[in-house]
Amino acid sequence: MNGCVLYFLPSALFRVAAFQMLAGYFAFQMVVFASLRARAKGWQPGGRWTLGKWGWPVSIGALIYGVLSMILLARPNGDTSLAFYDRWIALIGFLVVAAVGLVYMYVAKPYKRSTAPEGDAIDIANILRDHRAKDDADEHGSDAPTPVTADNTQRARANERYSSWASSREKSPSSPEPHADRAVRMH
Image 1 (tube, rainbow, N blue to C red):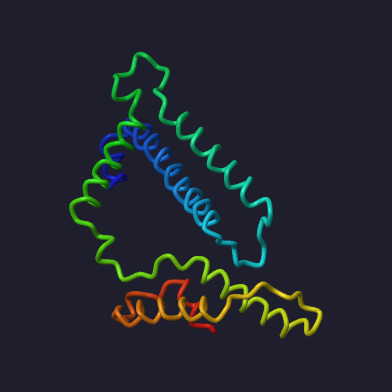
Image 2 (cartoon, rainbow, N blue to C red; image 1 turned 30 degrees about the horizontal axis):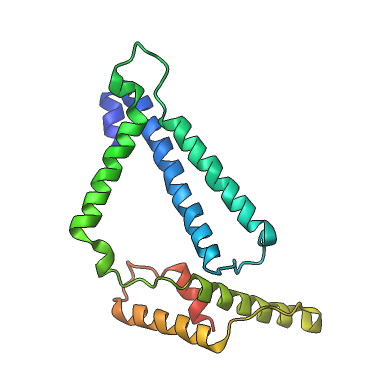
């Protein structure tokens, strides 16, 4: 759609780019905020490489940087010869799209019909750590570090969530399985 608009109105490029930059920063800040929220609930990344004790400060720094960048992007263009809406186009476009999205969420409530697993980040991270420890032990023998592993309750809860989700979903070649499913099924 943007391509059609820009083809017929090439002068609209700065308007589209301004809005998209602000929207992109907002999308990333939602992920950063979600990671901080998960950390506050006890989540620790389960990958091979983590920031360790620096995870909190780096995430907080990323959130501050992102919010300040969004403020700078939302500020009006300094060219006073432009119309009001052109100077504030990034913020106006962002607010319009956000308002439409919030109205949709309020009216349609699509989140109530979802069958995707949710709230299992801690369980999945623990399962990933278990699998990594097993792979390390297979590869390095007794020299492998001893991991912090998920207990049986966490493992069973994560597998139950996956099984419930998988059984409620129709399997078809056009809908590939999400990556998170692989971690749960491996065990």
